[in-house]
Every structure is written in structure tokens, then in C-alpha cells.
Length: 493
Ligand code: SF4
Image (cartoon, rainbow, N blue to C red; front, side, top):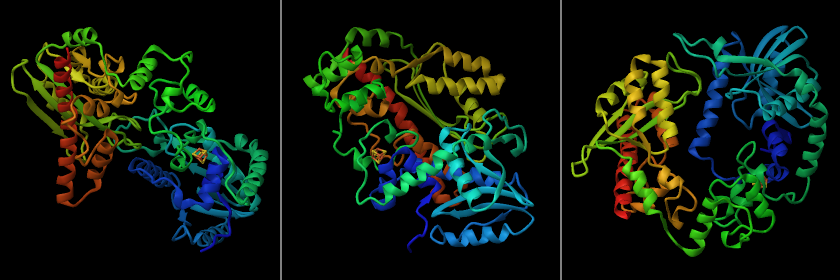
């Protein structure tokens, strides 16, 4: 069905990011990159936060249309409800001059309305202000008087204590003055975007930092296809500014970087390793690192999820909540490997259960080997702060932590197949090609969080068991990978 509106809130925001993105979105929608499961999960989080925020305004009426294509239905419902003197409307649609917007919550008192836009963020960014500004433009031009315009966002300092207190969970912030000052820009932007959309072909727009800021564009697959798979954009630690400086000089391949170009020694190491097809093995440094390991060795990995709305007492929005660990223990160099694992049942707070299961398994005097220690250290510290009864035991664990990422981050070992990365997912196939994540249902930590969140709502017993098994095998491989990487480092020296 042909639509008789040209722009919407989301296409306006796309236009602000990049005119070519707007054009492709409207005229070549099907060429868009596929959304990843992670992106879809972020959208779902936004929707559920919006629905929860509706309960701040009781007795509202939903004016949504029954489908995205039947948007006129939403406008008609909204118009009818706006005839009432006092009315709260959820998902209110307004159309002006071929521009359609849907406001999350509108509260009408007599002639005046308050508009509330709900965001699952913890602050008000420029994109959110631009989003509000376009709504203000449409609603006022459609003939309504806006008394005030608010952003409702998540209060990052809220700590749950008992029942969820939605009045404390959300912050309601007036942005009317700020978005009024953006109105002149809104009008000129609409004219500009309509001109862009009326052109015969997409505007010439080179790639740049705007491709991922404020959002990752859906047309990266189209516009970045000339960039080699391994390029200057893969140089570890190189600033965005320098990557594009090289690109704008016509340099995308590592072999074309001028020798006088300013890179750090580690960045040159990466480039030279690629050009000479040479592995770097700094045996003395690896030896020193390995000499810091004390038996019994505990190879530890957590998985966590970050609910936007705190599910448990003593937790904040978006707090990392660990729900699982895998632990491989090796008492002595020649002793067999033991494996322990913990996966919390969904529906309960996993933190103390996880601490109770883990603490007795860590033997005094041994090293606790993790990969990228910031994550594990933060998880343990937070448990100790929220549950001080574990403080002493957790401090003992923290004092024994060794970060296995260090030899790879500092390039004591580097191989061209790492392509600049030092993540365990890259290091494992480079050093231990016989072990691989590729056959697992879960291949990275973000997916593990999504799978665990699924368990909270899944009712099919067989599906629950299969998801649990996938989570256990994924986490197990993370710690087994560390065991094998240490073995291989020992062989190298
Ligand atoms: S990939 Fe970059 S240049 Fe291409 S449409 Fe998206 S933002 Fe614009």
C-alpha cells in the first residue's frame, strides 16, 4: 500500500545522521543489512520500557493502529480521543505536511497537552532531543497546544528495594525549551530531506565516522563494500580520526601505509607482521608472564546479563548480573583437569547462589586465571559491595587474579591471522585450531545473555533444557580455551 507520508521520526533521525542513509532507507529498503539478534534485543528492551512507563499514567487509552501499514487508523483513534477534555493517550499518532510521528504518551487537560517520550537510556542525548524536536514540530503544526514536553528515561541510580518503584525507576525531564530552540533547524531539515528524497539517485556521501554515530547504519554492507576485509580500520588501538585520515589519503590496505606515518610500536608490529607474514613470539616476556601462575590453577569465566529494569533487590538498572560460571581446576602441572560449572535457574537472584557455589572451589594460594580481568573483577567487586558477607572470600579471589589477555594485548604473541584482535575468540583458533566455537549454538557472550533472558519467559521444557545445555557448553569452552592457551604458551617457550 502506498503511504501518503514521506517522513517519520525514525527516517528524520536517519537523515540527520546521513542523507544517503535516508535515501537508501526510503527507496532501497530491501538492501539494508540484516539486523543482528543483539540489535533486535535492544529494540525489544526499548519497547518493554515504553510499556512499563505507561503505568506512570493510569487510565490511558491505546491509540495504536493494528499494523504499521494502517497508520491512518492510529491517526483517527488519536483524533477521536483528542476530542475529550481530559484524556491520556498511549501511542498517539499525528500527521502534518506528510510527516508522521507517534508520541509515546500524551496527556490532555482542556486545551493543553503534555507529551512524554520514553527512552530506555539513562540520559538525554542530542539524538533524543532531535527526536523530540520533530514531534514538537508536527504536533504543534497539527493544531495542538503543547504545555510541556518531557523525556522519560531510566534513573541509573535507582536501587531496587522490594517492589519495583516505577516512580523512582524513571526520571521525567522537561526538554521543551531545548526543543523549541531546535525548531528552525527542524523546518530547514525537512525541506532538505524532501529534496534529497525527490532526487533520481542517492546523494554522493563518502563513508566516515557518521556511519556508526549515533547509530550503526543499516547500509554499511553497501557503502563499505570496497573496504578490504582486513584494512587500516582493523589496526588495534588506532583512533577513529587516524583511520579516516588514512582512508581520506586513499590508503585502506596495510601495505600502503607510509613508513613515516605515526603509529605506536604495537601498531607497527601488527602491520609488519602482516606484511612479512611473520609470527611474533617474545619468549622472555611469555616466560615471565607464565612464571606468575601459581598452582592450583583456576580458569574462571562468568556470563552475565544486564536487565534495564532491575529484577532483584540491591540491583540497579543495567547492572551486570552474573548468572553462570565455568571453572577448570588443575591442582598441579601433571594432574588431571577438573571441571565445575554453575548455571542459576531463571526467576531468582543468581548472585549469592553463584558466590556460594564458587567460593569453596577456589583453593588458597592458587592463581585464578581469567581473560580480560576487568569484567570478572567488576562482577566480584559488585557482589562484595552488595553482599558484604562475601567480602573477605571475594578479596582472596581478587588477589589471585591473573589476566591471560595480557600476553596477547601486549603482543608477546602475535600472528597475522589475529588481524589486530586479542580477544579469546581470535586467539583460540590461532593457537589451538582444534578447539572452536563455530559448532556451538552460542558463540559469544552477548548471545549467552540473550539465551539466558529467553529462559525467563520460555515455557517449553525441551527448549529450556536445550538452552541450558547451550549455555553450559559455551561457558565451558571459554575456560577450556584458557587451559589450552596456557599449555600452548608453555610449548612456545
Ligand atoms: S554507510 Fe555511511 S555513508 Fe553509507 S548510508 Fe550509511 S551512514 Fe551514509
